[in-house]
Image 1 (cartoon, rainbow, N blue to C red):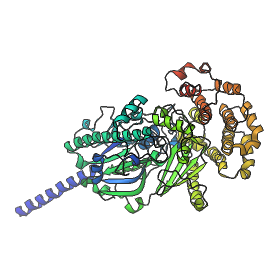
Image 2: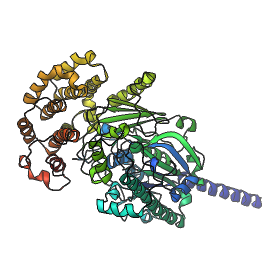
Image 3: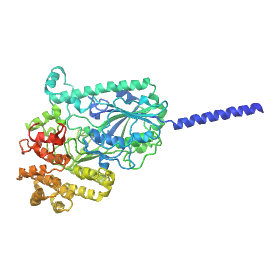
Image 4: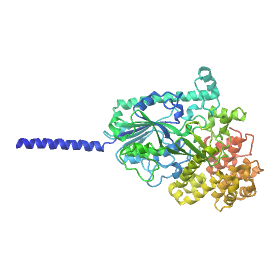
Length: 623
């Protein structure tokens, strides 16, 4: 009897030990590591595109993980992309869509940065080192965020979430001067480099692309050392690793633009055997499922076993109970581009499957409008010079010409988006389908960019989400006014006239933009446009009226333009107005207006990077 009791106690003890072990396993959480390179798209990596840079460390990670062919940044520039990455929310919905921020917004209630959620369940969170967020960080976000931040400072047994940023592919690495270029061309073999079809095939572009490939190789070595150290620490079996680029590449027409070279980023995910139950994909495989940056927060929360909060815009693609069949059906991504430094535009995109739709809400803008930091790159300067000299073909010239309000591309057959199918009868059903998808998307957010940035900064910073909801019907009206440019002019001319007479200044503002979209076709409204230029209560309405007049070569009193600029209420309002003048000069370099910096507060010129300073230097021929 005694022996039976002993046996029963041994069995019970064994059972309890196993229960404790099982509970520990159930409660254990994976480490999550993000390895991030700056300014990358799939088009410059051999892992994706033949002739791209060889990156053996990432290729090895891919052999042990999953390659995402269709991973997308929602924005083609750092701060906007990173604000989306860390919140899981579309930037134009909460006011984080402008690069660089003039003022940071408060995050809405219920929206937190990803590290905050993870800290609440015991993770050690560290970031080395770039943040670049367009929102106010309230309370502690990271346990560490600096150039010395490391996951190694966590407590024993504590799971970590670490972001390691690598910078050698950043745009600034291509700001070499003419002397350096001449020296490099004497020693570099460039015959193997093939410029993209929208670039001129010159030694400058070939060398720029070659140098960029070398930067990829250099950064791959850095990432290889980091991964080797992780392995030496014995952490590869416990850590889920994401590699991705923070947005597209930096050669001209990529960073800052909603073309695939600005949005389609590399992404490789490694999930160790221990956590294979969290991975619906096969090891060593490639997937064509669409994932984008709003998906990263819900995905990491899913991996960590956290319930996904309401209000996020993304969908998890890894974690418990992920249905691979459903995930692989995902084939849509949205993009947005607004102010990029001092350069203003308003462009939205949707890609569904192989078709890409781009909506240029200000089609009279040109992609190549002067931008101080972009034009530090010799390739930009040379491209513009060749255009002025008439030495480019039609595809290479597109960058400096007004666009159509809509563009439709077949990415499979036209990966570099050079053949706009929007006017083709054969593709009208596809065009209308994607137009409706995008229009519903910007209305339903609602998209805050349909208010001019100065107005939003003055009225919406405290809670962009609430501000958008309170003004949802007005934003819808603004979008509908903007969309008049998609119809034949004779069909909508009366609605344009009503918009120009509207009591709300931002409806008048968009009515004028629509007139500029139609060009001289809208000249029957000239009397109203002149009246608004001289008499409107809003400076930004006046400048849009002036923009129409200048774009279409109507007589304009430049003294009144100067007075308008002199009355700017803020630096950001002045910059928005000066953008219209920079557009005129980019299209006509000989167009001159007499400006004086004495019009503006000295604080607007404290550094060369001040937006108004950049614009005025360009407009007065000092650039």
